Length: 433
Image (cartoon, rainbow, N blue to C red; front, side, top):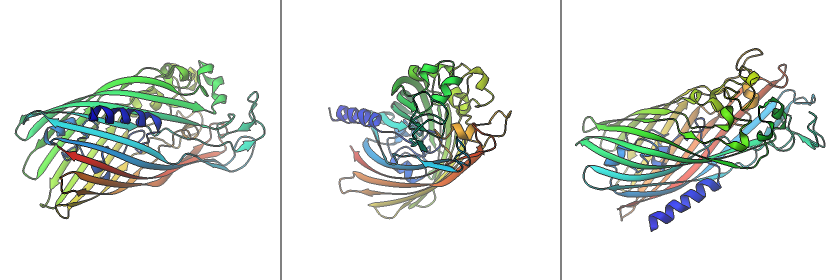
Protein backbone atom coordinates (compact mmCIF):
# COMPACT_ATOMS: atom_id res chain seq x y z
CA UNK A 1 0.00 0.00 0.00
CA UNK A 2 2.84 2.42 0.84
CA UNK A 3 4.56 1.64 -2.48
CA UNK A 4 1.31 2.24 -4.37
CA UNK A 5 0.83 5.63 -2.72
CA UNK A 6 4.41 6.67 -3.48
CA UNK A 7 3.99 5.68 -7.13
CA UNK A 8 0.71 7.62 -7.41
CA UNK A 9 2.44 10.68 -5.95
CA UNK A 10 5.28 10.33 -8.44
CA UNK A 11 2.90 10.07 -11.40
CA UNK A 12 0.96 13.18 -10.37
CA UNK A 13 4.07 15.19 -9.47
CA UNK A 14 5.90 14.17 -12.63
CA UNK A 15 3.08 15.49 -14.81
CA UNK A 16 2.45 18.59 -12.73
CA UNK A 17 5.89 20.10 -13.29
CA UNK A 18 8.24 20.51 -16.20
CA UNK A 19 10.99 17.91 -16.06
CA UNK A 20 14.12 19.46 -17.47
CA UNK A 21 17.27 17.99 -18.86
CA UNK A 22 20.75 19.15 -19.75
CA UNK A 23 21.99 16.81 -22.51
CA UNK A 24 19.35 17.55 -25.13
CA UNK A 25 16.22 16.37 -23.34
CA UNK A 26 18.12 13.84 -21.20
CA UNK A 27 19.22 14.53 -17.64
CA UNK A 28 22.90 14.65 -16.75
CA UNK A 29 22.14 11.83 -14.27
CA UNK A 30 19.33 9.80 -12.69
CA UNK A 31 19.33 9.33 -8.92
CA UNK A 32 21.10 11.73 -6.55
CA UNK A 33 24.20 9.55 -6.21
CA UNK A 34 24.56 9.52 -9.97
CA UNK A 35 23.91 13.25 -10.19
CA UNK A 36 26.62 13.93 -7.62
CA UNK A 37 29.09 12.13 -9.91
CA UNK A 38 27.99 13.94 -13.11
CA UNK A 39 25.95 10.91 -14.18
CA UNK A 40 28.75 8.31 -14.10
CA UNK A 41 26.65 5.34 -12.96
CA UNK A 42 26.66 2.55 -15.58
CA UNK A 43 29.01 0.44 -13.45
CA UNK A 44 27.66 1.49 -10.03
CA UNK A 45 25.44 -0.65 -7.79
CA UNK A 46 24.76 1.68 -4.85
CA UNK A 47 21.17 2.68 -5.65
CA UNK A 48 17.97 1.36 -7.27
CA UNK A 49 17.95 3.63 -10.35
CA UNK A 50 19.06 0.86 -12.69
CA UNK A 51 15.87 1.25 -14.73
CA UNK A 52 17.19 4.64 -15.86
CA UNK A 53 20.93 3.83 -15.92
CA UNK A 54 21.75 0.10 -16.23
CA UNK A 55 19.14 -2.56 -15.32
CA UNK A 56 21.80 -5.20 -14.63
CA UNK A 57 23.16 -3.32 -11.59
CA UNK A 58 19.95 -4.03 -9.66
CA UNK A 59 21.10 -7.62 -9.03
CA UNK A 60 23.79 -6.18 -6.72
CA UNK A 61 21.85 -3.21 -5.25
CA UNK A 62 20.15 -5.03 -2.37
CA UNK A 63 16.75 -4.26 -0.86
CA UNK A 64 16.12 -0.52 -0.91
CA UNK A 65 13.66 2.24 -1.77
CA UNK A 66 14.55 5.83 -2.68
CA UNK A 67 12.51 8.99 -3.01
CA UNK A 68 14.03 12.27 -4.14
CA UNK A 69 13.26 15.79 -5.31
CA UNK A 70 15.41 18.04 -7.47
CA UNK A 71 15.01 21.83 -7.68
CA UNK A 72 16.12 22.79 -11.18
CA UNK A 73 16.81 26.33 -12.45
CA UNK A 74 17.59 26.86 -16.14
CA UNK A 75 18.27 30.43 -17.30
CA UNK A 76 17.53 30.74 -21.04
CA UNK A 77 17.98 33.82 -23.22
CA UNK A 78 17.20 34.50 -26.89
CA UNK A 79 18.28 37.57 -28.84
CA UNK A 80 18.45 39.03 -32.33
CA UNK A 81 20.64 41.81 -33.71
CA UNK A 82 17.74 43.02 -35.87
CA UNK A 83 14.34 41.85 -34.69
CA UNK A 84 11.14 41.93 -36.74
CA UNK A 85 10.21 45.49 -37.73
CA UNK A 86 13.79 46.74 -37.63
CA UNK A 87 13.84 47.08 -33.85
CA UNK A 88 17.59 46.61 -33.66
CA UNK A 89 19.07 44.44 -30.90
CA UNK A 90 16.41 42.68 -28.84
CA UNK A 91 17.05 40.21 -25.99
CA UNK A 92 14.37 38.28 -24.09
CA UNK A 93 14.89 35.98 -21.09
CA UNK A 94 12.55 33.04 -20.62
CA UNK A 95 10.34 33.20 -17.54
CA UNK A 96 9.52 30.27 -15.20
CA UNK A 97 13.01 29.57 -13.95
CA UNK A 98 12.38 27.10 -11.09
CA UNK A 99 11.04 23.56 -11.42
CA UNK A 100 10.58 20.64 -9.02
CA UNK A 101 11.49 17.21 -10.41
CA UNK A 102 10.62 14.09 -8.35
CA UNK A 103 12.26 10.68 -8.68
CA UNK A 104 11.56 7.26 -7.21
CA UNK A 105 13.28 3.86 -7.21
CA UNK A 106 12.63 0.49 -5.55
CA UNK A 107 14.53 -2.80 -5.58
CA UNK A 108 13.82 -6.17 -3.98
CA UNK A 109 16.09 -9.22 -3.99
CA UNK A 110 13.79 -12.18 -4.62
CA UNK A 111 16.70 -14.52 -3.94
CA UNK A 112 20.49 -14.32 -4.14
CA UNK A 113 20.44 -14.10 -7.94
CA UNK A 114 17.17 -12.41 -8.94
CA UNK A 115 16.12 -8.79 -8.32
CA UNK A 116 12.86 -7.07 -9.25
CA UNK A 117 12.49 -3.31 -9.08
CA UNK A 118 10.87 -0.15 -10.33
CA UNK A 119 12.36 3.18 -11.42
CA UNK A 120 10.27 6.29 -12.09
CA UNK A 121 11.95 9.33 -13.58
CA UNK A 122 11.39 12.34 -15.81
CA UNK A 123 12.83 13.82 -18.99
CA UNK A 124 12.08 17.07 -20.76
CA UNK A 125 14.26 20.07 -21.41
CA UNK A 126 12.14 21.67 -24.14
CA UNK A 127 10.53 24.40 -22.07
CA UNK A 128 10.61 28.12 -22.82
CA UNK A 129 8.31 31.03 -22.05
CA UNK A 130 9.36 34.31 -23.69
CA UNK A 131 7.36 37.51 -23.34
CA UNK A 132 6.70 39.58 -26.51
CA UNK A 133 9.33 42.20 -27.25
CA UNK A 134 6.71 44.59 -28.69
CA UNK A 135 3.22 45.40 -27.37
CA UNK A 136 0.33 47.09 -29.17
CA UNK A 137 0.31 45.35 -32.56
CA UNK A 138 1.67 42.38 -34.43
CA UNK A 139 4.35 43.65 -36.78
CA UNK A 140 4.01 40.58 -39.03
CA UNK A 141 0.34 41.00 -39.83
CA UNK A 142 -1.09 38.20 -37.68
CA UNK A 143 -4.88 38.88 -37.75
CA UNK A 144 -6.06 40.30 -34.44
CA UNK A 145 -2.52 40.32 -33.06
CA UNK A 146 -1.77 42.69 -30.20
CA UNK A 147 1.94 41.96 -29.71
CA UNK A 148 5.02 40.59 -31.47
CA UNK A 149 7.41 37.89 -30.24
CA UNK A 150 10.80 36.79 -31.56
CA UNK A 151 9.16 34.27 -33.93
CA UNK A 152 6.95 36.96 -35.45
CA UNK A 153 3.91 35.52 -33.67
CA UNK A 154 1.37 37.03 -31.32
CA UNK A 155 1.59 36.70 -27.53
CA UNK A 156 4.07 34.70 -25.53
CA UNK A 157 6.48 32.41 -27.37
CA UNK A 158 7.44 28.99 -26.05
CA UNK A 159 6.92 25.27 -25.69
CA UNK A 160 6.55 22.91 -22.75
CA UNK A 161 7.49 19.23 -22.94
CA UNK A 162 7.05 16.86 -19.96
CA UNK A 163 8.01 13.19 -20.04
CA UNK A 164 7.33 10.64 -17.28
CA UNK A 165 8.93 7.20 -17.66
CA UNK A 166 8.12 4.12 -15.58
CA UNK A 167 10.70 1.33 -15.78
CA UNK A 168 9.87 -2.01 -14.08
CA UNK A 169 13.13 -3.93 -13.91
CA UNK A 170 14.35 -7.50 -13.62
CA UNK A 171 18.03 -8.36 -13.09
CA UNK A 172 19.64 -11.79 -12.82
CA UNK A 173 23.14 -12.94 -11.84
CA UNK A 174 24.34 -15.21 -14.61
CA UNK A 175 27.51 -15.86 -12.58
CA UNK A 176 28.63 -14.83 -9.08
CA UNK A 177 30.13 -11.54 -10.38
CA UNK A 178 28.12 -10.92 -13.55
CA UNK A 179 24.50 -9.96 -14.24
CA UNK A 180 22.11 -8.99 -16.99
CA UNK A 181 18.95 -6.92 -16.73
CA UNK A 182 15.95 -5.65 -18.64
CA UNK A 183 13.59 -2.71 -18.13
CA UNK A 184 10.46 -2.24 -20.25
CA UNK A 185 10.08 1.54 -20.61
CA UNK A 186 6.52 2.85 -20.31
CA UNK A 187 6.16 6.55 -20.99
CA UNK A 188 3.64 9.37 -21.00
CA UNK A 189 4.43 12.82 -22.31
CA UNK A 190 2.64 16.15 -22.61
CA UNK A 191 3.39 19.02 -24.98
CA UNK A 192 2.16 22.56 -25.53
CA UNK A 193 3.27 25.35 -27.89
CA UNK A 194 2.27 28.99 -28.14
CA UNK A 195 3.15 32.04 -30.20
CA UNK A 196 3.97 30.21 -33.45
CA UNK A 197 1.19 31.69 -35.62
CA UNK A 198 3.58 32.66 -38.42
CA UNK A 199 4.52 29.00 -38.98
CA UNK A 200 0.92 28.07 -39.74
CA UNK A 201 1.49 29.28 -43.30
CA UNK A 202 4.40 26.84 -43.64
CA UNK A 203 2.49 23.82 -42.34
CA UNK A 204 0.59 20.95 -43.94
CA UNK A 205 -1.92 21.23 -41.06
CA UNK A 206 -2.18 24.92 -40.09
CA UNK A 207 -4.81 24.40 -37.39
CA UNK A 208 -2.54 22.09 -35.41
CA UNK A 209 0.61 24.17 -35.05
CA UNK A 210 0.21 26.42 -32.02
CA UNK A 211 -1.95 27.57 -29.09
CA UNK A 212 -3.92 24.31 -28.81
CA UNK A 213 -3.28 23.70 -25.11
CA UNK A 214 -1.63 20.56 -23.73
CA UNK A 215 -1.72 17.30 -25.66
CA UNK A 216 -0.66 13.89 -24.35
CA UNK A 217 0.87 10.76 -25.85
CA UNK A 218 1.78 7.27 -24.60
CA UNK A 219 4.94 5.42 -25.61
CA UNK A 220 7.06 2.37 -24.97
CA UNK A 221 10.59 1.02 -25.41
CA UNK A 222 13.09 -1.19 -23.61
CA UNK A 223 16.46 -0.87 -21.86
CA UNK A 224 18.82 -3.84 -21.43
CA UNK A 225 22.11 -4.00 -19.59
CA UNK A 226 25.14 -5.97 -18.44
CA UNK A 227 27.23 -5.55 -15.28
CA UNK A 228 30.41 -7.37 -14.35
CA UNK A 229 32.94 -7.31 -11.50
CA UNK A 230 36.13 -8.12 -13.39
CA UNK A 231 38.39 -7.92 -10.33
CA UNK A 232 37.82 -7.07 -6.67
CA UNK A 233 38.42 -3.41 -7.58
CA UNK A 234 37.27 -3.00 -11.21
CA UNK A 235 33.70 -3.23 -12.49
CA UNK A 236 32.24 -2.53 -15.93
CA UNK A 237 28.75 -1.96 -17.28
CA UNK A 238 26.91 -1.45 -20.55
CA UNK A 239 23.31 -0.53 -21.32
CA UNK A 240 21.25 0.01 -24.45
CA UNK A 241 17.85 1.70 -24.73
CA UNK A 242 15.76 1.43 -27.86
CA UNK A 243 13.89 4.36 -29.32
CA UNK A 244 10.74 4.99 -27.28
CA UNK A 245 7.92 5.14 -29.82
CA UNK A 246 5.08 7.44 -28.79
CA UNK A 247 1.65 8.04 -30.26
CA UNK A 248 1.28 11.35 -32.11
CA UNK A 249 0.52 14.74 -30.64
CA UNK A 250 -2.65 15.22 -32.73
CA UNK A 251 -3.06 18.82 -31.58
CA UNK A 252 0.43 19.59 -32.94
CA UNK A 253 0.34 17.40 -36.06
CA UNK A 254 1.22 20.45 -38.16
CA UNK A 255 4.30 21.33 -36.11
CA UNK A 256 6.29 18.12 -35.66
CA UNK A 257 7.38 15.96 -38.58
CA UNK A 258 5.39 12.77 -39.21
CA UNK A 259 2.11 14.31 -38.15
CA UNK A 260 3.01 15.17 -34.56
CA UNK A 261 5.24 12.16 -33.84
CA UNK A 262 7.76 12.93 -31.10
CA UNK A 263 9.88 10.04 -29.78
CA UNK A 264 12.71 9.57 -27.29
CA UNK A 265 15.81 8.55 -29.29
CA UNK A 266 17.85 5.39 -29.08
CA UNK A 267 20.78 5.73 -26.66
CA UNK A 268 23.48 3.59 -25.11
CA UNK A 269 26.19 3.91 -22.49
CA UNK A 270 29.38 2.20 -21.32
CA UNK A 271 30.94 2.57 -17.88
CA UNK A 272 33.80 1.52 -15.66
CA UNK A 273 34.26 1.82 -11.89
CA UNK A 274 37.63 1.52 -10.12
CA UNK A 275 37.94 1.18 -6.34
CA UNK A 276 41.37 2.79 -6.19
CA UNK A 277 41.61 2.54 -2.39
CA UNK A 278 39.17 1.39 0.31
CA UNK A 279 38.05 5.03 0.56
CA UNK A 280 38.34 6.29 -3.04
CA UNK A 281 36.30 5.18 -6.07
CA UNK A 282 36.58 6.61 -9.60
CA UNK A 283 33.86 6.06 -12.23
CA UNK A 284 33.72 7.03 -15.91
CA UNK A 285 30.90 6.75 -18.46
CA UNK A 286 30.45 7.30 -22.17
CA UNK A 287 26.93 7.92 -23.51
CA UNK A 288 25.67 8.16 -27.09
CA UNK A 289 22.29 9.77 -27.90
CA UNK A 290 21.05 9.40 -31.50
CA UNK A 291 18.79 12.43 -31.89
CA UNK A 292 19.03 12.18 -35.69
CA UNK A 293 16.82 9.05 -35.57
CA UNK A 294 13.84 11.15 -34.43
CA UNK A 295 12.61 13.19 -37.40
CA UNK A 296 10.82 15.77 -35.26
CA UNK A 297 14.15 16.64 -33.65
CA UNK A 298 16.86 15.58 -36.10
CA UNK A 299 15.54 16.69 -39.51
CA UNK A 300 17.20 19.84 -40.86
CA UNK A 301 15.10 23.00 -40.81
CA UNK A 302 15.66 24.73 -44.16
CA UNK A 303 16.37 21.69 -46.35
CA UNK A 304 13.09 20.02 -45.33
CA UNK A 305 10.96 23.16 -45.25
CA UNK A 306 9.60 22.66 -48.83
CA UNK A 307 7.93 19.45 -47.60
CA UNK A 308 5.88 21.47 -45.12
CA UNK A 309 5.89 21.37 -41.34
CA UNK A 310 4.12 18.26 -40.09
CA UNK A 311 4.89 16.25 -43.24
CA UNK A 312 6.47 12.80 -42.98
CA UNK A 313 9.82 14.35 -43.89
CA UNK A 314 9.06 17.84 -42.67
CA UNK A 315 11.51 20.13 -40.90
CA UNK A 316 12.71 19.28 -37.38
CA UNK A 317 15.00 21.15 -35.02
CA UNK A 318 18.20 20.11 -36.79
CA UNK A 319 19.73 18.40 -33.77
CA UNK A 320 22.88 16.34 -34.26
CA UNK A 321 23.74 13.12 -32.42
CA UNK A 322 25.47 13.68 -29.10
CA UNK A 323 28.43 12.08 -27.32
CA UNK A 324 28.62 12.59 -23.54
CA UNK A 325 31.70 11.89 -21.40
CA UNK A 326 31.27 11.66 -17.62
CA UNK A 327 33.81 11.38 -14.78
CA UNK A 328 32.92 10.98 -11.11
CA UNK A 329 34.88 10.61 -7.86
CA UNK A 330 33.53 9.21 -4.61
CA UNK A 331 35.38 9.44 -1.29
CA UNK A 332 34.23 7.57 1.82
CA UNK A 333 35.32 9.90 4.60
CA UNK A 334 33.82 7.79 7.40
CA UNK A 335 31.12 5.23 8.04
CA UNK A 336 28.62 8.11 8.01
CA UNK A 337 29.91 10.49 5.31
CA UNK A 338 30.55 9.80 1.61
CA UNK A 339 31.53 12.75 -0.61
CA UNK A 340 31.19 13.01 -4.41
CA UNK A 341 32.24 15.25 -7.28
CA UNK A 342 31.99 15.01 -11.04
CA UNK A 343 32.45 16.61 -14.45
CA UNK A 344 30.82 15.88 -17.78
CA UNK A 345 31.23 17.14 -21.31
CA UNK A 346 28.54 16.84 -23.97
CA UNK A 347 28.47 17.75 -27.63
CA UNK A 348 26.16 20.60 -28.52
CA UNK A 349 23.34 19.20 -30.71
CA UNK A 350 22.59 22.62 -32.22
CA UNK A 351 24.85 24.18 -34.87
CA UNK A 352 24.99 27.86 -35.76
CA UNK A 353 23.64 27.16 -39.24
CA UNK A 354 24.78 28.56 -42.55
CA UNK A 355 23.22 30.94 -45.01
CA UNK A 356 20.60 29.89 -47.59
CA UNK A 357 20.57 27.42 -49.26
CA UNK A 358 22.50 25.65 -46.46
CA UNK A 359 20.49 22.74 -45.03
CA UNK A 360 20.98 23.97 -41.46
CA UNK A 361 19.94 27.58 -42.12
CA UNK A 362 17.58 28.93 -39.46
CA UNK A 363 18.39 26.36 -36.76
CA UNK A 364 19.29 28.92 -34.08
CA UNK A 365 16.03 30.79 -34.68
CA UNK A 366 13.85 27.70 -34.35
CA UNK A 367 15.82 26.44 -31.35
CA UNK A 368 14.93 29.51 -29.36
CA UNK A 369 12.10 27.16 -28.38
CA UNK A 370 14.57 24.56 -27.07
CA UNK A 371 18.03 26.08 -26.47
CA UNK A 372 19.77 22.80 -25.58
CA UNK A 373 23.29 24.22 -25.89
CA UNK A 374 24.83 23.09 -22.57
CA UNK A 375 28.24 21.40 -22.86
CA UNK A 376 29.99 21.48 -19.45
CA UNK A 377 28.64 20.28 -16.08
CA UNK A 378 30.26 20.30 -12.65
CA UNK A 379 28.65 18.43 -9.74
CA UNK A 380 29.06 17.94 -6.00
CA UNK A 381 27.25 15.63 -3.61
CA UNK A 382 27.27 13.64 -0.41
CA UNK A 383 25.50 10.83 1.42
CA UNK A 384 25.00 10.73 5.17
CA UNK A 385 24.23 7.26 6.56
CA UNK A 386 21.98 7.24 9.61
CA UNK A 387 22.29 4.85 12.52
CA UNK A 388 19.40 2.82 11.05
CA UNK A 389 21.35 2.31 7.83
CA UNK A 390 19.01 4.59 5.89
CA UNK A 391 20.64 7.35 3.82
CA UNK A 392 20.23 11.04 3.08
CA UNK A 393 21.83 12.07 -0.22
CA UNK A 394 22.18 15.53 -1.74
CA UNK A 395 23.56 16.62 -5.12
CA UNK A 396 24.33 20.00 -6.70
CA UNK A 397 24.90 20.67 -10.39
CA UNK A 398 26.11 23.74 -12.25
CA UNK A 399 25.95 23.78 -16.05
CA UNK A 400 28.20 26.51 -17.41
CA UNK A 401 26.74 29.07 -19.78
CA UNK A 402 27.09 28.37 -23.48
CA UNK A 403 25.71 30.20 -26.50
CA UNK A 404 25.25 29.54 -30.20
CA UNK A 405 24.71 32.17 -32.90
CA UNK A 406 23.61 31.98 -36.53
CA UNK A 407 21.78 33.86 -39.28
CA UNK A 408 18.16 34.60 -38.52
CA UNK A 409 15.45 32.58 -40.25
CA UNK A 410 13.50 35.82 -40.78
CA UNK A 411 16.41 38.01 -41.92
CA UNK A 412 19.72 36.36 -42.97
CA UNK A 413 21.52 39.68 -42.50
CA UNK A 414 20.64 39.54 -38.78
CA UNK A 415 22.21 37.25 -36.20
CA UNK A 416 20.15 35.30 -33.68
CA UNK A 417 21.70 33.94 -30.46
CA UNK A 418 20.53 31.43 -27.87
CA UNK A 419 22.26 30.81 -24.55
CA UNK A 420 21.65 29.02 -21.29
CA UNK A 421 23.15 28.13 -17.93
CA UNK A 422 21.67 25.97 -15.17
CA UNK A 423 21.78 25.07 -11.50
CA UNK A 424 20.08 22.26 -9.61
CA UNK A 425 19.97 21.11 -6.00
CA UNK A 426 18.40 17.81 -5.00
CA UNK A 427 17.80 15.69 -1.92
CA UNK A 428 16.94 12.01 -1.64
CA UNK A 429 16.05 9.67 1.22
CA UNK A 430 16.81 5.95 0.91
CA UNK A 431 15.32 3.18 3.03
CA UNK A 432 17.38 0.00 3.29
CA UNK A 433 15.14 -2.99 3.90
